[in-house]
Amino acid sequence: MTASTIRPAPVRRSIVVKASLERAFEVFTAGFDRWWPKTHSVGAASQKRALMELKAGGRWYEVGEDGSQTQWGEVMVWEPPHRLVLVWSVDADWNYDPGLHTEVEVRFTPEGDGVRVDLEHRNLEAYGERAEQVRAKIDNPNGWGGLLRMFAAEAEL
Amino acid sequence: MTNVTSALAAIADPTRRQVFERLAAGPRSVGELARGLPVSRPAVSQHLKVLKEAGLVADRAEGTRRVYEIDPHGLGALRAWLDQFWGDALAAFKAEVEKDPE
Image 1 (cartoon, rainbow over the protein chains, first blue to last red):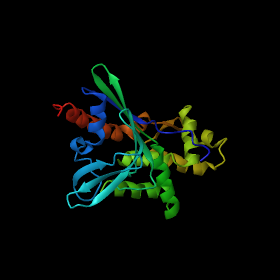
Image 2 (image 1 turned 135 degrees about the horizontal axis):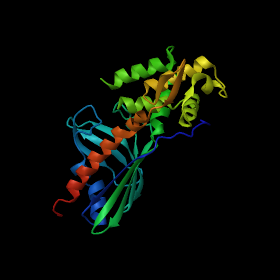
Image 3 (image 1 turned 90 degrees about the vertical axis):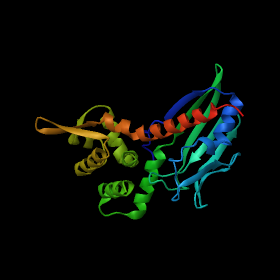
Image 4 (image 1 turned 60 degrees about the vertical axis):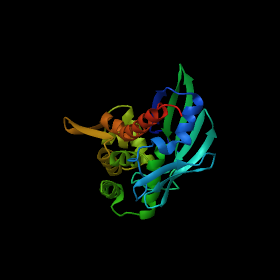
C-alpha cells in the first residue's frame, strides 16, 4: 500500500478515577471481570466472565455461560502500574479474527488525588485492510459495491 | 457497526483512497478527478459510487455537471460506534474502582 496516507484517527477516551495508581491498574486488569459490561460480549454464548492473563503475551478472552472460551486478542505490553497495550482482534461481526490487529493502549497517570486513565484504540485502518484481503479471496464478479452490500446485510443480521 | 466497516473498507483500496484525498482538497467533478489519475473516467465513477455508499462522499448538481465532495457526517460516523463502546466501558470501570476499597 503505497498510497496509505489516510488513516482513521484513533478513538481516544479519558476518565479520572478516585483511586491510587496501583489500585486503578489492578482493577482494570486483574479485576477486569468485575467491571467489563456483560453486554460487550463476543462469544456465541452469553458472557459469564471476561479475563486477561496478567503478562505480556497473555490471552484476553471471555468465558461463556456454557463454559466455552472466546478469544478477543492478547496482552501486548504489560507495564504495571502505568501502561497496558492490548491487541483487539474482534471484527465488525463480533468474531475473533487472529489476522485482525488493532491496538488498545491504556495509560494510568496520577492526577490530583486520583488517576487519569487514557484509552486509545488505534490501527483502525486494519478493519478496512482485512476486508480488502477477504474481498481478494472472494473474487466477487459484482466488485466492490456488491461485496459491501453483502457485508452490510450480514452485519445487520 | 455497518457504517464503520463500510467506510473503512471503502478507503482500503489505494486508488479509491487517492480519489478521496483529492476530494479532501476541495469539491471536484468526475472529469477533474480522472485527470492525473492512472484510471479511466468510468473507473473513477465506480470508486465515487462506493465512497458515496459508504457515506464518505456526497454529490450535488452544479449547472450541467455533477460535483463530488467529502461528506463530513460520514467521517464522524466512522468512529462514533467505537467511541461509544469505550466510553461505556470506562464509565463501568470508574464505578467499580471507586467502590469502597477492600
